[in-house]
Structures are given as structure tokens and as C-alpha cells.
Image 1 (cartoon, one colour):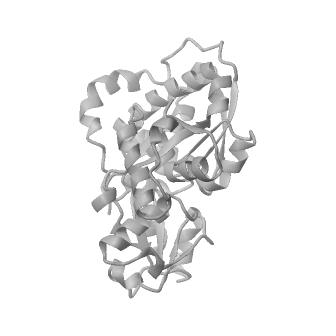
Image 2 (cartoon, rainbow, N blue to C red):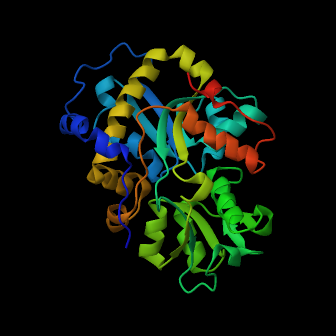
Length: 321
């Protein structure tokens, strides 16, 4: 059984969070009536990394800012990028890798409105079926590994794990045939040898089909790596600055709650991710940062270059308004 891991920032934030969390449902009573938009459609990958968004909705923090939200579930950041560029989504919550690639390859204008998560132990895992003959990462040579999308955070983390075990990413076969909620069944039916799974899906796979963790991906070069953020286009941000500021204010308050209140995260995961209450209660959680640190996020871009996802260095400062 897993134990929750809470970020180091938790200890530093407890005093402030107690006051904030206790009044979260009531706080910010003054609605931001001057926001340009009162309804936002947001796409989010329904993993623990998006807990801040879910708490901002379920605790009424966004409503207190005069913003009502519709959340669409995303398979991956990559699958919603084109839709966001065409105006379907105001904000999307997903991994930094996909947005950086979009900026480089599609000449998109994505900017990070707010940080979402930083990896902690047992939050991003490589899972194998119960009774699998695979015992070590090196046993995956020549075998199929499930990702939710190519060229995303999963591929980066798994590639780092393979390299740490003296393997090249090209020595496994990546497949994107399965979404996170379906990966447990794919493992049970031995359709793949292993699957990249974030929380709460990894713990839910353990609970439902007896899947086992082969590797905690929070190791080596990618330890405590920033994973996700809340992203907008530069043009949207320039057009709706008051809405963006109000969203960020509510989100930061929700991030404080997520980092200090396990019950709030559990409730969000059961409702938005559709996992069991048992899985939500025992899963590990990421750290939920309160600010967007370009030095930390630059690590992601540098690793992308190291593993061939980028051909040259990318400066993330261009993404942080």
C-alpha cells in the first residue's frame, strides 16, 4: 500500500494555509464582476497534477471570482493543443513538454498562466501486470510500453528511466493505443508489457487488477521535475487580462489547499478522475507550487534536448509572462 508524499513546501505553508483553507469556501466573497469572461471551457488531463483546478471548482474559488468553468477531460495535452489554438479552450492543464514542442514546431504562442505540479515519489510510475516475467526496467528491451501520447512527459520520463538502466528509448516499442483509464485492463490482458501511469491511475490499477510498479519515475535526472501547468495563448492573455488574473488568484488559493489538505485532493480525484475512493485515499500526490519558476521549468526543456525531443536549447522564459 502506498503512502502519500507531500512536498517540502507543505511545512513552510501550513500556517498560511490553515487560515486560507478554513475560509476557502467563503473566502473572496467579492466577485470579480469586471472580468471580461464569466464562463471558461478548460481541458485537463484528469490526473493528480490537475487537482488544483478541480479544487478551485469544487470549493467555489473560481465562482467567487465571477468565473464559471466547464472542464473537458483530455487524453493528453497534445490532443487538445490544436483545439486550444482554434479557440475551443481558454485554458488547458497539461504537461510542459507538449506545449514547448508546439511553440517550437507549430510556432504557437503558448504561455504558462500558472504552475500546476512538481513530481514527487510514486506520482509517475511505470506499471506492469500481476505475475509479469518483467522484473527490472532492462527486461523491457524489445517489449511494448504504453504511453498516453508520443512526445509528451511520459515519453520523457520513461526515456530517462531507460537510460538510467543502460538502455536507449529505441530499444522498446511505444504505443498510444490506450488512454490512462484503460491502461489497467491493457495490463491485465497482457496487451502491453508496461504502462506509464500517473496518479491516481497507477494506484487504481494496483487496486483493481493487481498491477505492480516496476519503476518510480521520480529518480535520477528527472527527480522533482516540474510536470504540468495551466497554459493559455499569448493572444488570449492579452485580450482577457482581468479574467486571467482572476483565474490565477483562485488557482493559487486552490494550490495551497491541495498541498496541505489530502481530503480535498481525494474528493477531486474521485469526482473528476473516476477512480475508487480507496485509490484516491492512498495514492501519492505531487507538489502543487504557488509560483511559476523559470529555473525549474528550464530543466524540462533541457531534458527534452538531451533526449532528442528538441534539436536545440529552448528558453522557457519566453513562456512565462
